Image 1 (cartoon, rainbow over the protein chains, first blue to last red):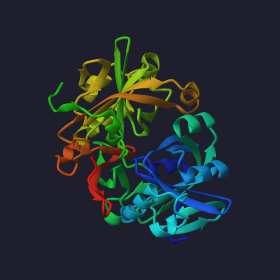
Image 2 (cartoon, chains in turn yellow, green):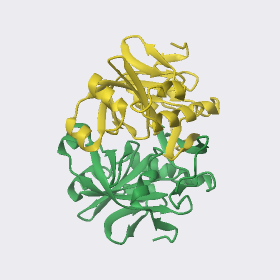
Image 3 (cartoon, chains in turn brown, red):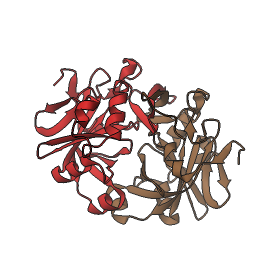
Image 4 (cartoon, one colour):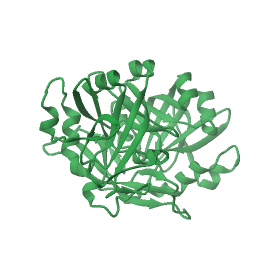
Length: 196
Length: 196
């Protein structure tokens, strides 16, 4: 694991996705790893931290999540624009070499039998909270965040530093058809104190 | 209603929140209007369009949503940074003059008995899809989008134009404690076609 990658306190894990980035969802079951892009992921609770993610019934990653009961939500960077689009528009079911073609490199984190995508800015290891009605009716999955990590070159001591990091670290925010926005400049409310 | 405000096709309504902005939630019941900020709102489906939003049990707006079965999700702008923070950190239950103090101006749209917040960039009128288990266990509310509008100065013909509009129109992406990011620059995947 890269020495820049450090754990994030679980009580601050929601900050990794609070600003609404498009994420990568990865999962592993029975020797099969897969990664997909998801624009529809969202924080759900602070403590214990939870999140929601929408996984279409056609997605191979969904099957791996359902079978293993675990998954990773990670925040890709502007440098991973092409990778993010590619894993979001091809399926492992149709193309066994999908991850290699998209340039996805996976790494491990001790204590978690999960595929983490290298080069992202943040990672949230999740345990599925089974909610069959939501999953079947809405394709809506709820996870409890059981581990969180960030790359300290862009998120350190509980804070994003997009403004001082290289622009290649900015998060991606998907609109439609290959068109994204990067996250922009900081805006601070008058009279705000620095947050811990 | 301002002449810049025009309907958005329902099949493109998800684009209004796809990039993960912090939103304002407004609702009306029995002569009471309220507005709150929510960082945890997310698209859920394309057609019919649906979305999720997390509404804490302490929020007066939640009570209005539960009683009326309808609400508005709207996208505030960088110009509304202070307003967004103020409606997100005070409660109508404690302060009856909350909306006036925060500078919230409401307007109506024909056919919808709902309070729309003036000055936003986009509005989604929603009908609550009652899911008592989600609401009680997770504070998670699901809405079907039954009407959508945008201000054409920043979203027109199905597309955000953050890059050409005044920066005051940029969407807000909340992190923590008065600290937000504005949405940034467009990034387009190699070989992408323009989307309709």
